[in-house]
Image (spheres, helix red, strand yellow):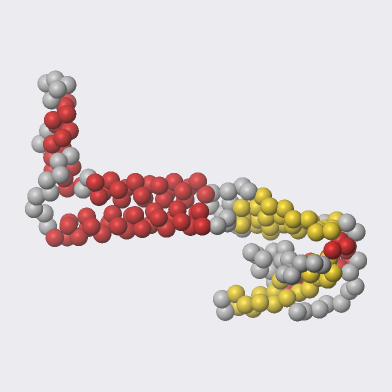
Length: 199
């Protein structure tokens, strides 16, 4: 028997990473080449009218001149605030992606009289598997905990010689009724003494 849970409509990581890179690039370009500098100088020159290739570097130099000149106060504020916002957003997106693996799928496979295999899949495609032999499972319990302001129930395996519980679906809180089905199935297939017990 196999139980599998996954997150619905999980966005691909490439899109978020591309968004972060674009935000960082846009903020750096906004700091290095403010829009009022470029628009003010490009109107004065037409690169198509350059007589020779020797005049092209001069046109480029003048077009991207660092001379700011007078401009309204709101434009100065926008030139300072928008690049910082873009930089902060880009850093936040990249930090979110690389902070830790994001679990998009967890599965529990039960083989009668043999054991339990747990599997986690990250949004980057990485897969982590853990096999627990049936002889090592001392008990299966339904535990309860708090998430935000809600009480959640979860199935946990008590494994011999392991100090902490093993929670098959710790990233996906399930209703109590579904936890009871998983609980009874584990007890039946692994031949653990029955009787619902909550920690």
